[in-house]
Image (cartoon, rainbow, N blue to C red; front, side, top):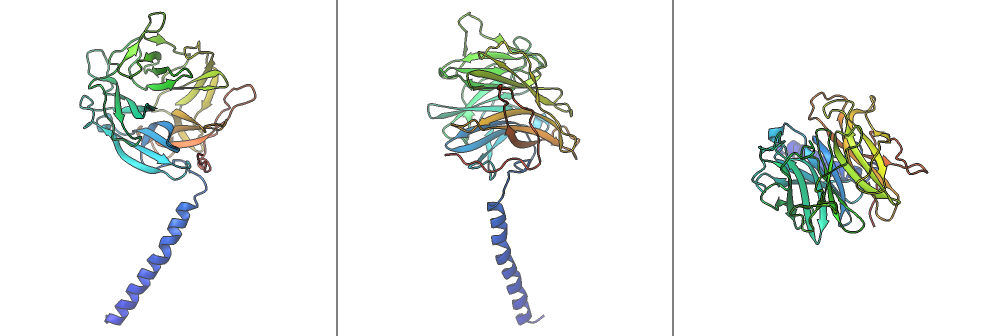
Length: 333
């Protein structure tokens, strides 16, 4: 083949690439909905937060326990376009963790970002592991071990120390709600997050387990009421789901009201272990959760999804419709 023919062919290829690139960029920029899943990869147990006018997602890396030695995070200005932040925490920054790094709970306090996590899947009080804390100057990490040991390393009230959720009440007090194996505790955190302190009645670990509770607690406040949510069913099965209760205090008592998130046999199975986002200054709510695609049978093949969450006139959470479309853009002020 002579040089002129090669030159023309090369020019045609380059022209095609040049014309194609803007089309790809325009498609990405003009994306109308988040789509579900919202990011690529196997992820579960998402923690959703708002930091610095950005939405943040902190999930468990969904893999075999021995491979769960790091966590990624994702940030977005609008719930549609997500930026991945790889390995915001891993076992190089928390030496006592060896596997099963689970279900992050992240909060900001006094200019620092604290990531609470479960680790090692302890089965008794003689094993090393439980709930730990890591700290960073930025929401994207890197997060480093804060205590050099677990914050909670004992099985108390029969609650496995996993699936911690950190809740800040209106008076500035931070609580941690946690527990697996069908039991749930609430504890009062020290102001510097270095430990837990007793309540006024001298009890340190209050049991607040509602009917049907399995794991994955979440709490938020709306119109003066405390909403307590949790996951039910088996995490590997299609019946995994989210239920809720409403109380007058963070301690309940919480009576189960009903299921608000579950599988849709035409879309996905195993919808559960969620968190919620309230757009500041509004009554707009989103639920972020994991589910299993219909084509997957591997227990760890879970993906992160977002859908709208609504309330009726009486303040009850309406059943969430899980979708493939996800949500439309919602920028923060």
